[in-house]
Image 1 (cartoon, rainbow, N blue to C red):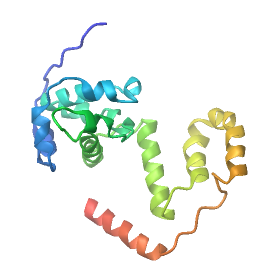
Image 2: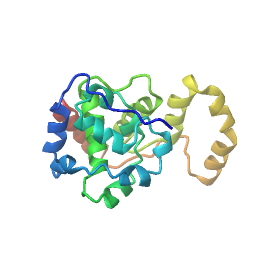
Image 3: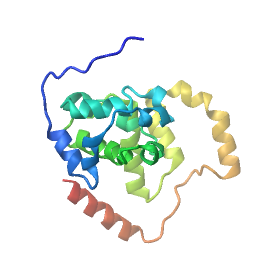
Length: 190
């Protein structure tokens, strides 16, 4: 297997500075490139770039490649990498920061199903206060993956039968208070 060399086309260390400004984010500068994060990652085989490579790319100033990558979006947030990192880097928090920055700068991969899934998930939670699995399934799968949706029919029927999936969303108490929190968070995000 050939090793790819990171080439600095346009250096942009603004991303590194933003990550380093996070609480305990300065630890990114002490990344040993040991590979523990990548070795412990349960979804590493699905990633475009390993966590180790993402950190090398951040340090190399490869902002557009990092923020356009689907790697932060596929992070399962298991915190295994964070717990095992010998430099005590809050890797999962960095992945969240990369997601926020990619959205803010308009560099998130809009064609990615992962990004689309997150958008739909967030939209449903903001509207109902918690996830409504059936609605998410219909919005996410129906248009882009109808055959996959049909193949999941037996699983869906079992979920309905056991009460794991409901036709109607759960009714939440204090809906108005939750709506105010969502509105305030949206204002702060802008």
